[in-house]
Image 1 (cartoon, rainbow, N blue to C red):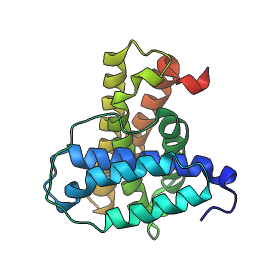
Image 2: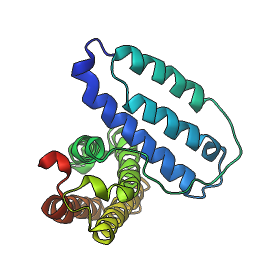
Image 3: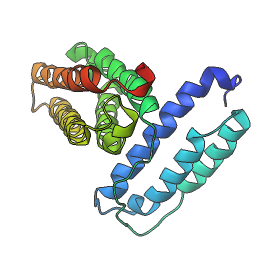
Length: 206
């Protein structure tokens, strides 16, 4: 999967941690669907993938991930908890996703071309999950004592991503304005560059 693990390690950490918070969000949402029954397994396997130390570990964990995805289970609600590391999410996943969204949304024609709109909508859903999943990670920031402020920031970012997601769906359904959609994305970017960058930074920025 990864010829040189050192070259791919950031991607593995990024995607595995993102999958963990997505699974947690699904499991903790109360969404009534069989996928909620495997959310806990997806979190566990994602954590093993995030801790992989070499390419062999990645391949083994990925096999477990494929098996976990194929399971079925009764819907059950997870409790919100810390399931991922902050740095791969905020320093790698979030910038990568927002860059892709911005690139695919530079104009309406590009946004509506091929599968671009579906990717933008899916990516904005992941942004919301990352924001919600990071609420438990204040201890990894430069202001670990500011838990309330951190949670408020994460929830504000999630709300901005959800609003952008709604606007994007409306444009696809020809019920909304592309310009309003772009304004909604600006709110996502501004949230990232204000409270998070200015106050919390992350230990990796030290």
